[in-house]
Length: 169
Image (cartoon, rainbow, N blue to C red; front, side):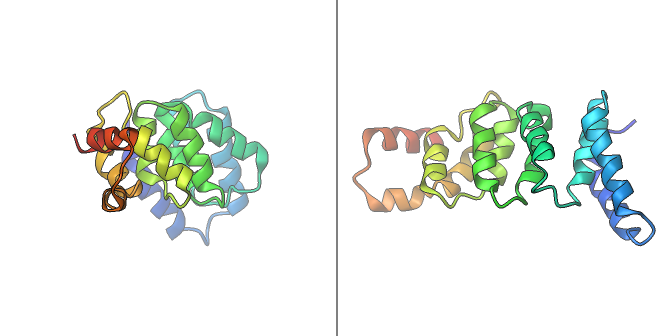
């Protein structure tokens, strides 16, 4: 009766409020099974949402499954919530952003925290290119690609000028 996105906060809060009564190993296995074995998309999302309460980094098989399902726009945001806790978050979210084109790309640009020039450059030139509406990402891309610093620097290349104009448009 509910979409996963509408109950995640309450579900996570309920689990955290009752963590003394819940076996974390059982919860992890339950979430992992929902994620990896359910044929219902909302159950997969709930599984991912519960996994968000755990440290998933280091389990290579699970990381690979999360990165793979992230390539389906329907699941990108749920996967990004997990990836952003990893030490390789910037690289993993950027790789995902490069391969999704709808809401997935919008969510990636929302949650990526760029520290590397490669990420800022990709955001500048590609961050608003999505199949939904560029404006959904424009402000985040403007800030995260550090367009104000680029403009202050001056002497923009033709490609940089086109990118800045596209973002501000």
